[in-house]
Image 1: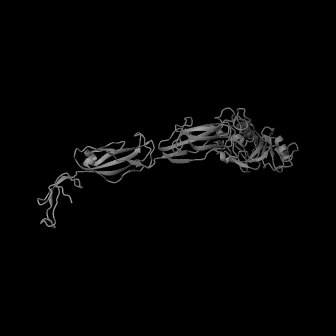
Image 2: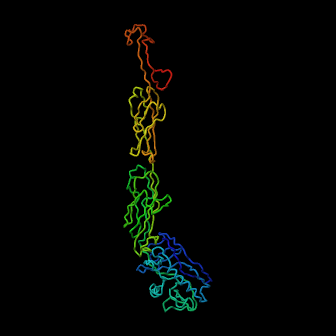
Image 3: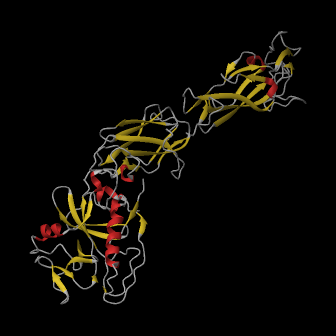
Length: 485
């Protein structure tokens, strides 16, 4: 849950007349990557538009941070470098500052954290006199502090103690003899540099959720396109666990409802170690599929997240993968007749049925070959659409027929393959049926038989007459004279 971070750190610099009337209220939009998991001494991080430096690690889970520039607080008007009318403006501003932190919300894992849920991360206080003494070894090492650092101690109403490297003016008085701590007995005012004691974050806040695959493509008939085939492996970076995984379908842009489980993929998760496998629910039809994985670190460690029981209260518990795209492509089919040459049969031969079969490059159960007639004298034959068995139906007729073999999805309601077809031609021809009558000079009445001395045994001589019935010419014409050579 995104929380508003009320940043009310007060710092006033300069000696000219300056008016501050702005309340700084902002939504924290700092990404996980921009804020260190456990800021080391000297490291900086950005929070609410400001840069903070860790100046001290106390070794007990707490540390001190200091802002790098002026931060304004609402309802505070400064008439000059020092407020001379002693109206209490300074006290009001400091009280507002403290109250805003007391009622403030949370940022990442305790870096600027104040929350009323009892979490250990709700510890944050301004630097006190005791803090100053501890941090500086009683003022002998002031490297932690910038001039005009406000110390949370009010001498009299509106008059606060400040750190400064030297006495600023004769009106300033040393505070209890502690080196470099002063307060002004006359004026209420000064330049404020905020320093705060906070609970430092732990190192194992959930940082990211990663997939080893962002795009997976395979043809529909791939051996990996099967139930329980692993599409991607998911792992978490840091976090404590146990982890709650959500796998949900999205559009190409990543929009979806994480509480609605994916229709096409299953999640096989190790909730303790923060890993998971994404598996196919079943073989996927050709198409494009998009999904994301969301993970919530459900650790109940009060030092890790804002709320140990309500997992919606801290946005840093939750991370998502980018969109994962699975593409199932349609294989391109090819097909050829087992005998691709023209089939030529006489009417007599065609009476006996025969097969015109074809073979496709893919021969799975979800692929089917269908046989059809597409042109020519289609009435001459029938062809079985499933087997390619050809039966002559011409009743003495002859001609040509073009047949086709088509390979496509076996289920007409599916579209997982790009179909293909091939064609060939069948010719049914009419035969010659004739007889020979020998020439009258033949010594045989059944077959021509002559002596070489006979007059008709010469070039161009007649030896007999052939009498025949019409046959089928090669061009399969259906009328006119038939000539054979």
